[in-house]
Structure formats: structure tokens, C-alpha cells
Length: 136
Image (cartoon, rainbow, N blue to C red; front, side, top):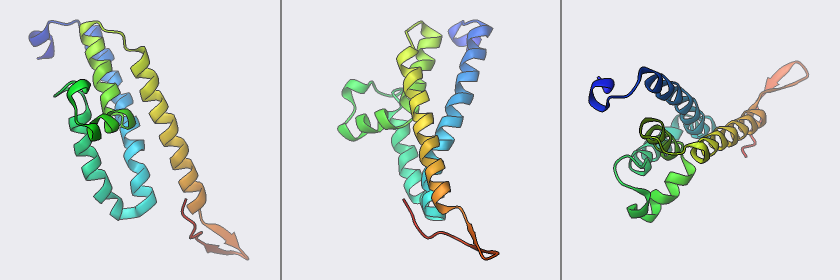
């Protein structure tokens, strides 16, 4: 369907598909931070965050006319760089800086998750498991 609507090659569509997989991995790690940190209550942070990402994604309005809160969200969340990469792949714009931003979000999210899990990991004391109560 996409090939019929925008007349692009199958190779470009496969690259966009692989890019979406990379973005999904990044977005999963980004939103997992709040779920790991706050448990089931993390969903109360993730729902507004995902809605803000949708608006700040850059597909509905350009960054220049976004309200300030959504501009901040576009720099911190993985949706905006991914949207710009998709536009670049389909319509021939440069994507390198957005790929670096998306990779940076993935690395930072992974390091934060690693730190949270490391701090919450159960420890053994005298053969019994105890859970550390320290939260970062």
C-alpha cells in the first residue's frame, strides 16, 4: 500500500521497517524505566508521556511551532528522531544526527535501567534473600 501511495522502492520500505524495529526497542527501554522504578504505578507516568510523544513526534506539526513542553519532550523521547529518520529515508533528507540522537537515547535509557536493576537486585545474607530498599 505504501509503495502505491508514495511510489517508493521496496528496499527503502525494508530499511524503514528495520528502523521501526530499532525505534521500538529504544521506546520500550525508555518507558520501561518508569515501570521498573515505580512498578505498576509507572503506568501513570507512561500514559501521559506516550501521549506527549505522539504530539512531539514531529509528524503532526513541525518543531518550530510546537509549544515549549512538547519541544522539550521531542528532545528527550525517541519519537521525534525516529519520525525525522523516516522522513529522511523516504524523501531524501539527511538522517545521521537523528540516528545519533536515537542511539544516545537507547544508551542512556539502558544505563539508567541497568543502574535501577543493580540497586534493586536481591542480595543474599546468610543464605536468605533480602531485597534492597534503596531507590536511586
